Length: 313
Image (tube, rainbow, N blue to C red; front, side):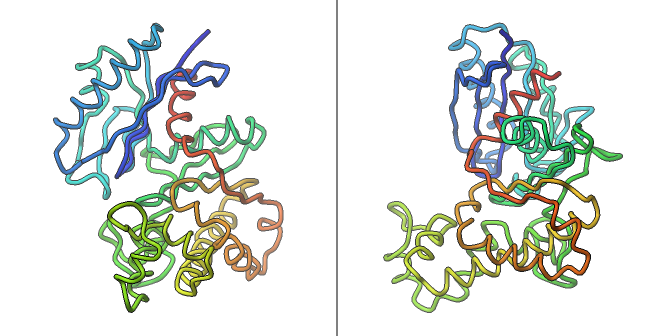
């Protein structure tokens, strides 16, 4: 039975797994990205994990797939740029890892791999035209058009997080203004919440996550569940901004499915009503009505999608 090795590299965490063609996961692990330590440090740590995965499963794996946050040249296996990977530009990640592990790697945008995972696992390949929106440190997007991963002319298609939803809007990590990511990425959501909180210490003490009492998407979801007005307002705003981005997608591409995934999706109970209400504003109803919009509870769509994509190749 065939098996694929998949790696999901995000701005905060890295997930790695090996999965069989029957979708059974044989190996799974995760570690911190720490992109600020540089490509050399990161590639050494990742190569060790890859070797561990191959050794532990005892399978002959010749090819893997990597999903990375950023602008990817999928033909050459190069990360051209990423606003969420500190200072990484024109990194030949496929060549680096082949030299360290002996394995060949297909490199794709991480949201492309999440979209492939959603297409195969969630939709059973039945939705021919779909988008996946990954809501984590940043916001990514992947497109399946006609049952195939859509890259565009330069492998850049699907940058949903960097659609402009407000002219001269908030500064985004990419350097532009008014991007969807600047309103709905986890950093943006938390920043917006903190700007509304008067007594931040009291708020952290009550809702903060972990020993450090962090205010993050999980904390804001908890706060909303307890009726906190600030958290509820922030999630409502998030839903509205998402409706602008998703509405644009539906009008342009007439998709049949949109799947939302990632850490920010924890707040789905509180942003989905505003998202649906926002879509009701569109006068052209057909693209809105036929599209199924839902949140995936699978936290590993990116790494699973990478492993399944590796088997395709």
